[in-house]
Length: 342
Image (cartoon, rainbow, N blue to C red):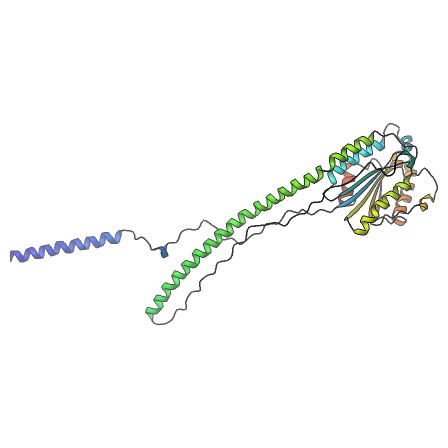
């Protein structure tokens, strides 16, 4: 009897031990299998965003500047050398308005006997630069998602299929998260590539201008010291401009053609119809004239300005003809005229 009680007692202890063991094991966190692991994603769900490229469009232009070299306008204002001041002004304006691909010619309106007419104050072209297309990294490819299975059959079969679908959905989420991280990185990198390309463009732009502007500046500074001419051969100057524009206009080499004149617009020949001796065609050319005659002879200036405007528009066929008082022909006016046409 005593032996039987010992056996029952040991069995009870063993049962209690198994019970507590089950409880302890059930409380220990279970390590998921690899297929059940689901790492959190740090990447937001974004669509692919292609940044807007910087605007590097350039409207290239051919600018001719004619400056009256005669001293005739000195009678309007003997205290100023308007020829020299006009050169200083146009030099400053060109440094602000020239772009890659532009062509510039600066010359005197002077007596042919004063200098070799095969030479001009300055003629040159800013180096043209081409805007290369942006090259981004390859865009992320949308992941190929696994389709879930149709649920059918007995309850046991349906439960099994549902379990398979849960695993499929987990795999699809993992693939989508990887894709969204690639998209997020692409969206972060693309603006940096865009900005770097813009920085390179600006560097090439500055290099193109620096290849011409120092020479232009030095040449104009030297021209300022030249003596005044005895006469103004206005129509010869306009004829030279017409010939210079002719071939580029035919070949459509430039988008804009601009003629700027600093003069009292009085030709030394004084002949009313003397211009008929010259073939002057300024078709599609925008013209601005700083009329020295307006320095003092205001009434005469107004009448002359109307005649000049009519002659440029209807005889020389210019695209436009703006006649300005010298006081109006400032830096802002010239920059607006070159850049905007008014």
